[in-house]
Amino acid sequence: MHVMSRVAAQTAFLLIGLFAGGAATGGEDAITLKDGDGRALVETNCVMCHSLDYIEMNSPFLDRKGWDASVNKMIKVMGAPVSPEEAQTIVDYLSSRYGK
Image (tube, rainbow, N blue to C red; front, side, top):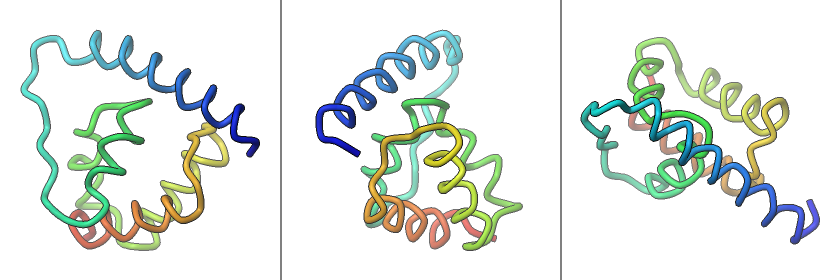
């Protein structure tokens, strides 16, 4: 993806996440993810479109293959501006900390 279009996409996703996330939380407690390599990437990228509680809700069902499919769907179908290297780090984190 061209650098400018990636920056524009990240900005748009961040704004959408801020507005949608603020409305969706409604005073609920913030989710704190488990420590580990990749946590910051997950916190930065995933909240652009949905709350982090989706991770905990899906953890009983997804193994490494499932998290890989989910992350790739977010990129290819939903347009998440995540590089292949970042995607691998995110999948590694999710499968090691939240995989079944």
